[in-house]
Image (cartoon, rainbow, N blue to C red):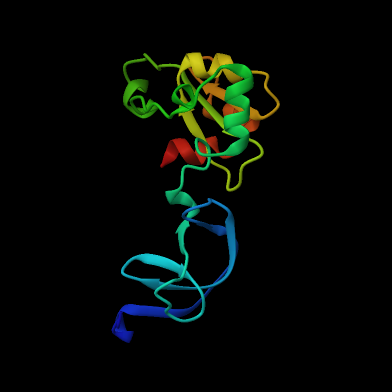
Length: 158
């Protein structure tokens, strides 16, 4: 298939931790090109090139072999670990009714992805060495939570 050169952006390179192969989720490092908001392996256009996707687009926490293994051993499913957003803390501070919010990250997954989780998910991964957890409530400030789970403050301020 003939593709106009003006829609292909070539000469791109990733040094890793940015893309994974779409089909295998294996990390990709090397030259790539962009075509119609999609990314492909190689220096130049090739209609048979493997597609790669940005890591932020792939759900590295829920589509991960160690999560699957943990799920099989513990009985905790990825459904429990899915992020559950609750109202922002700032909106509740004035009414003095700050909800308890729970957060976790899987320590063996890069890039670091912090998820807001339910109380049940928090209880199920609490104390597991594969996870860092924390919470924010009227009894524990965001700064205290940041010391337990670095990055949670930035997650909350987004």
